[in-house]
Length: 384
Image (cartoon, rainbow, N blue to C red; front, side):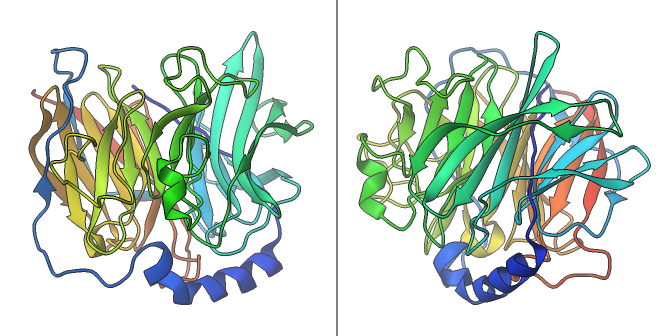
């Protein structure tokens, strides 16, 4: 079962102005006008390395609020002690205890929260009695990945000094990617966007429009297909990464005019952008396993438990639940809680609990009085 990671930093006044400006660029970032297609479209997928089918999981109740009044949260990391750490776009990192109390544990320096940038994904590495918090952020000169020691006990946590482990990831007002996660192999996977330079996605020498795989210190992981940090290419804007129990890596991807995607990621795989959007049936590229009309998705965070994926949808204002196996999708994706909580930015699994972060205070949503919120949903194992 997978858990995920988190971090943040401050700058509320500046962020409020910046996010207000970005409210008018929905078509350029999360989507332009979309076709009126109604149904999801399955597509072919490569064959996974194992034929076993893990269990399917389902929600066992309605989402309930764990914490409220968060300012543009982006990523959530659960801990075994019942606390959660959440990053905010402005650069602040907060700790949420089991009672829902929110406490700031630190801020990240050099965060530029303009457009879709800011403090984005978080990941946690616990090793040899030490805990390191990793973060993906937009700075004035590009996107980068940093790490910091996570210090102290629950309720007293703080952050040590920042170390840059990967820089030079192109940035723009939109398409900054931003999700990071440690895989079952122990390496850190980093999702980047094309930063508005479409051709960079097909350039193996660019870090834009890629999924990267690095070690804990930032060096390319052994066995990467190009001998660099690049693990897969041909992406437009990936914001979700998760592994099912069979070890398969899945990613969410924002399309442009037509469809959003879920892809199964393989080493060296080329996912077609900008030559193709969605499924093309071109043997030179890998098709997504499922696509949605863009107004039904804008997929960001992704969580996996067993062989079930939970997709956080921004513009679609819902969570998509879908089962996957060796041949691709099993059955049809199911939309959950359409319009009930507004925009959903992140999804994470904590044992038998699904955690969701709303994103209604980012300048594109319609905030309720207690937005943004961290929500919790109980999960149960279903028959295969």
